[in-house]
Length: 199
Image (cartoon, rainbow, N blue to C red; front, side):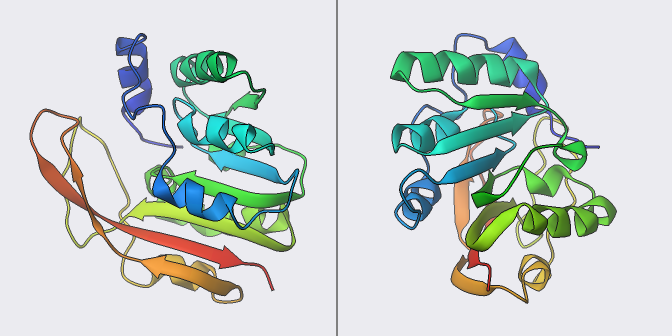
């Protein structure tokens, strides 16, 4: 169901971490909100930088991706950093995992899930979450659109992500523009970052 081009990019560049190996600011921010030993579900974990970061913080991490090549890189990074992560090769829309989790996290992944499908995805993710657990997402929005590597995205529209969590408490909501040059041409993407807590 997902329509990301990055799986073939991971396979094309086995010796290179396209996104780097250091955690994003969002991952660092939400890690500080978690209890010791928290269970983390990282959706669309790609090459594993966020999953490995959470594991380094002592969390029990499950990283999910549809790309075997991405997961191979992720496992290599985890070994290099001396941490263990449970890697799951799956489409996030057909994911079968045992909850509950303290954090459900995604960075640049959920917008590849078609809109009609993700309407059903968010309730399933909520059901996997502990009371007072967190969700944190970064998604591409339709404010600034740049198509690279033939990707097919159902861009989030204004208020769409917030509406999915209208029954949760928002802790952080931002709509930055991010710089990118993955296809060799400098450009920008508009994104939405949302951190919410279950009531």
